[in-house]
Length: 373
Image 1: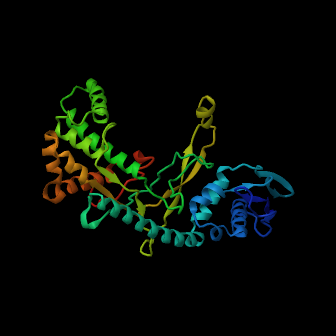
Image 2: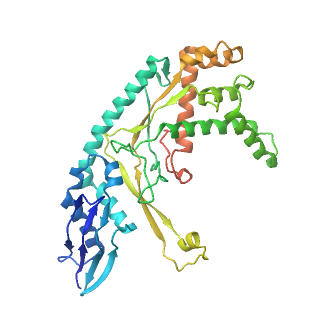
Image 3: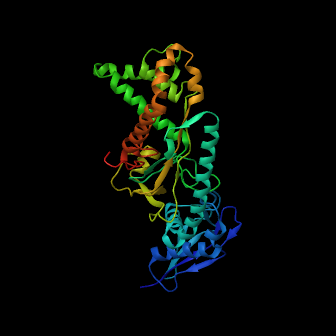
């Protein structure tokens, strides 16, 4: 059996790093292995994990791009593999696999571990600053809620990226995270649907959509000073309306990366697109078409995240002067905020363990482990 040789040159990003012309495969004949070896040798030549402090920088600015065509040669027959200046899914897959495989990722994990400690301290400093301004920590002395991913997590899948799929990474440190806006949005959504379920119990099926739309508009645009429904008012006070800033503040949630974490931080996943011409060219779907896999990074199962939530007790106390709010505010603040803490802890846990966060939650991505839940 004749050997398959891979020949060509890769540049990284703007061309600051270049492999020069590489030739791989004289000793082995398996084409797929030699393609992987070609990328491996290219990355090793520029020592990419030593050069880059941030995974975000690597994935956004220094992805490998063919400089000239890269070809495979077998029995003196030359075949195009990678076209000049283009990235295909095979190159993307091999590149991402190289980054996260154990013997490479160990170096990067050490950097991420240090950055994780920095961001943990940063969240603590932000929380302390808010406490000094009259906020209270929803999770009391525990400071934050700890939950582990029960399934893979992908936040920011639709982010604009040359790979067509993204992942939310800290812009400086390259650590995967869940933005505070995403957390507040899903918790608000979960509480909204609790209200919906309670208010459509006795509504006819053909009228439910109208009721849901009215509830949505009321909770988004309503005037808190005129609201008489207690549960509606609690929702508006906690999460805000278009004219009122909510009393809750969520911080970005970061994973805990330390020596105790034996799990891989990232996994490679794929979306297998069938009938591409049907979706992109308005042609009839046909079984003769080959699937078109799209590869992307996810956060692995079993990774612990820390969730911070703070409540603006200063503004809540000021709202007490409005008689309409006094009973509701007193209920939230009663027993040294115990009622509020219990309500929000249960709501956040239920949201993350039942609904999930991020993309593809209907396929169980983004679900967190809630013990017996």
